[in-house]
Length: 486
Ligand code: HEC
Ligand code: HEC
Image 1 (cartoon, helix red, strand yellow):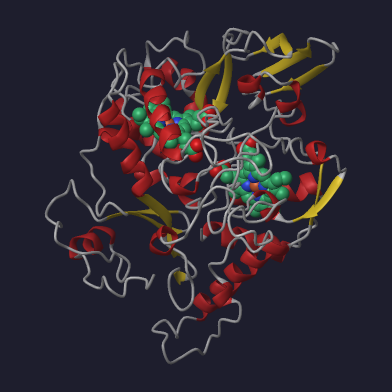
Image 2 (cartoon, rainbow, N blue to C red; image 1 turned 60 degrees about the horizontal axis):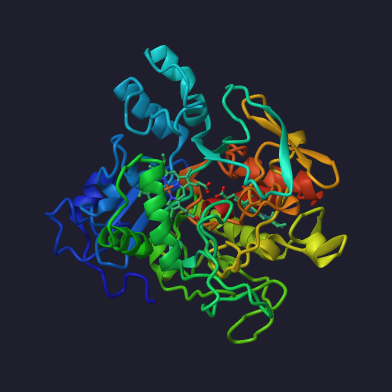
């Protein structure tokens, strides 16, 4: 896809609104209709992220933006376009201050640390919604299935609510954009359904999954009756409208404070290129390769910035930014970061869902062993993994800690979130979560299901410590520069 070549007319109001030149490009037919913006762009700490829609415009009248339940909430309450279609502590703080903590995102059922919390005064609300305000975490309530291989031996919940009937699991809202790449819906895959008639099956097995469309339609309804406390389910039309809206959205960082435009001079950042990336179930499976073409697995998952590897300061001819040495330096750093993401060797140990399932103590891999969907970075088939984030050893005082007992062996394990195990009931699934899509990261810190990494530096530090990677200072900086440019 020729970036912007066919769409060169610039939307003047967009540029005025954002103070950005050469960034906003779109057809301008609808520019006087504020409900029909061609693109959405918003600043973040490292630059500007942009959302486009393959439906032609971002339809603000879609039910996604409408109050659907009984508590004032819409999908957009927790999936804010300017916060990477998730929510951030800063955005939540602004909403809290503007409304004294009464904005619909602040609701007892799942916005508060406990549904029984006192929210009668502003001070009380400040405390009741501390997990939401501090880390952008929603309280997902899930019971231990009766048929589970384990039972709850102890719930140490600082907010005094959790029990076997409803564990409190504090999780980050996943973005509702770039969903076309998704293989697994929700952190624990609970909205990814089996379908024996489907052709999307794990290689060589009869474990087959329903279409993304089906899964997302079900998810939209669960979110409405759950988060928005609706008493009537969404109609089929409403579900379809929401899913079509979501599947049309593509979001990526478009402008970087250091590197300038990310879709320029051989760089393929930004949402326009992303929307042209082909993807399907099992496109680049780490073990099997490409399910359809039978090509072998490629660790070169992110292929956006290899053109900047030898980016020269004196690439004078075509480069309007030639006077800015800083741009060249920043572009080379991003290219080096991409090479590290694809290629830096990591000895992967003690990952449930990988080492135990394959019965190998260590795998020599890279970031892309797990983040393998081309240019999207999620796992290209459902494969929840336990990389240790919910381990008792990483528990912080604001998190609940659950002691689970194996019903047949009597063994116990402590975790802040059993993850996949609450869906399957299986002991071996405790602490397993999906590998999420790694685009448009910059606008939506903090990271990981529990928001435990405050920024991308902390993400890289986690991996460095967890797997003893031994990144140099320079490598860390490069990798972070690259992650910010996704
Ligand atoms: C109260 C906040 C809240 C509201 C309101 C909300 N969501 Fe979410 N959403 C979340 C959280 C939290 C998660 C992750 C939960 C998990 O995985 O356990 C999530 C996950 C998702 C996902 C999964 C994305 C992925 O990568 O797997 C989709 C899709 C989604 N929401 C769509 C919607 C839609 C559509 C609506 C409106 C009908 C909606 N959400 C309303 C908080 C919310
Ligand atoms: C063993 C598999 C594995 C490897 C190797 C791995 N990841 Fe991950 N990654 C995951 C899983 C699983 C998650 C989700 C974990 C969670 O939140 O519970 C994740 C989450 C992330 C997130 C957070 C995304 C978000 O939306 O919060 C980032 C960023 C990330 N990984 C980057 C990297 C980088 C960079 C590397 C290489 C240094 C890497 N990962 C290596 C499996 C892996």
